[in-house]
Image (cartoon, rainbow, N blue to C red; front, side, top):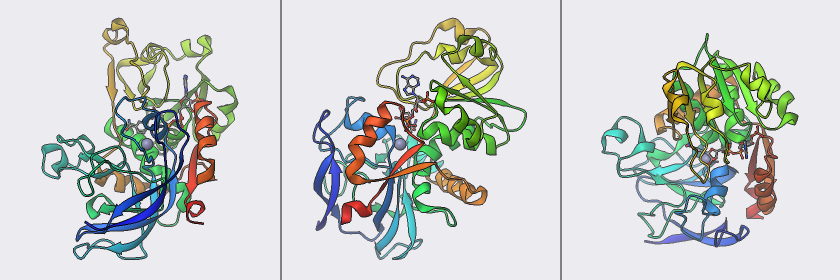
Length: 351
Ligand code: NAP
Ligand code: ZN
């Protein structure tokens, strides 16, 4: 198969800084869409993966799964996109298309495992998939989304992961009016969780470890902000929540949040810290609480979320950076110093 060489940024091992690397992209096949990447969001998963915190990383690692760009070429059988269209790609670029979960539109739970945008087997070129910290990507049409119109394009990039990862569980657990909903951690995912929970009509309480984020939390849509290190403030919310979404990237005490759930309330974890989070049995047993998890969202639901954002003028709060500042941005992510998503302007990699 012929391929095109393009520019990317990659980690060569778990401790190396990200640095320029030339990589190959396949020539578009009949069902493929080739996209010139304009913007790519910076997810904490990029950092977990490149640092091998999930113990499965194949190097070199080119992260990036919050991609928006312009279509440059399409294959002969592509029907939904043409050259010049704005389009988007999230965390997956393929799946088996045939299993029970794929047929139900839950490609993220494909029984043969989805092909993730990075660090999955590359069924076309061999080796492993390489993500959006690069100038171009080639993706099967069925995994390409229409970018929402009428919104700032750079600020829509984070919707492709931070957006869908919070939208999907809030929809699944039917968050809405009359419910008290908690969002834990005001980072990339958390700030989108606050926006969606508010848009769905819930009473929204943000939990943060960072007192200086209180004003932003209220501005972004929380009705209340609780500094989680304040034991007295936490106790005031005991056994009062219908649903809590935990979007924390590091070790923390999950029991503190289980104790805030009402009877039959659910704590859904989307954060994926490196080490296990111990759960005390009685925090689940009394009073019958649910501890759950959720992963991104299916392709149809991702399009639904993008269309919802266009209709409700919802975007991410971003700090636009050139590719060359990525290592600095990752250092800041580790210090919880993110307001509230870094997005790479890919023009910086082309010049
Ligand atoms: P992020 O922007 O770095 O935000 C994480 C937030 O967690 C921080 O801003 C901070 O909020 C809080 N936090 C960090 N360290 C903490 C600590 N030691 N104790 C308590 N709170 C801490 O990360 P992100 O991109 O939103 O990603 C969050 C997590 O979700 C990551 O683990 C990522 O891999 C995972 N993720 C999962 C999925 C999925 O499908 N399930 C998809 C994407 C990402 P405060 O300053 O407000 O406390
Ligand atoms: Zn992500």
